[in-house]
Length: 309
Image (tube, rainbow, N blue to C red; front, side, top):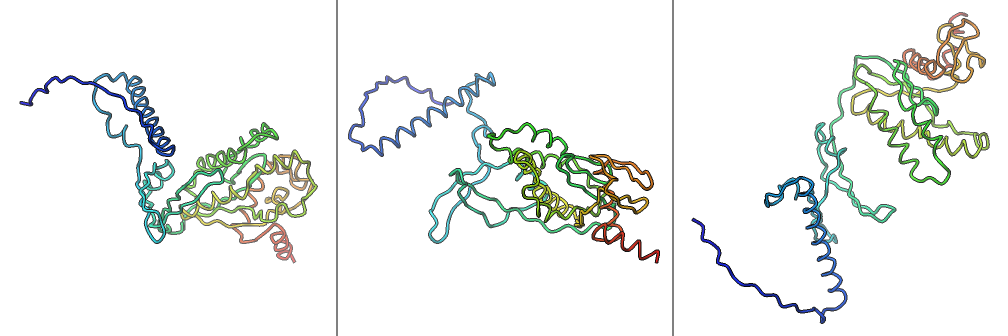
């Protein structure tokens, strides 16, 4: 049987630390304020839970850090830093990735310190079965695939709402593009054929107004391509680049190209009357180039003409 604690009298005598220098006073004040904030946090937390049992907080509540990083090495400060994990990192670890032995320490442009956790995983085998799918990247309609999947079309409407002085618009656009690519089903795809947009802005200076150029800068086709390449690399899907020249104006049914075939988002072949959405028609033509092994529509037309000679 535990011994009962004796009742004792308690008295307090306050002594001010007037002899401390300013730096020590500042450190102790900061520590005292942090203790106050921590106590207040748990008081509010237990009130929200309606927990009046008087028990200590559970381990999940107390331990807010998932990793402990120990700095060591020649010239490195000897200290231990607690690190809280993130949802993307946890998802990668659940998918079979492993943390590398190397970390990157840096300072963000806003002055905040950061650590980059590097994760590793073996390359998966290339898929040998599945469909060849073309993808057309469009500023207005997002990413259009030849198998009927479309995503990212809401970004155009959002960019129209951005004002000139609005900040973090590129960050929001990147977030929307990442969320859009997660909606695509690649389970039956072995090859994705995309446009080679490396020189898409070549000789375009002065073509559009300043307002349209600002909105067009949120297209982020290079960022979309990078995310797509990473996704396909993880799934073992081959990615092929093709020349985007006239892919939205070429009719794959009669193998005729005419600039009059496209009017806005509508495609109607003036030769055979075939109708489709211009971006879907472009993605279908990219798929055709991937299947036949030609780099562009020009090569395809020349090969067709030579076959009739």
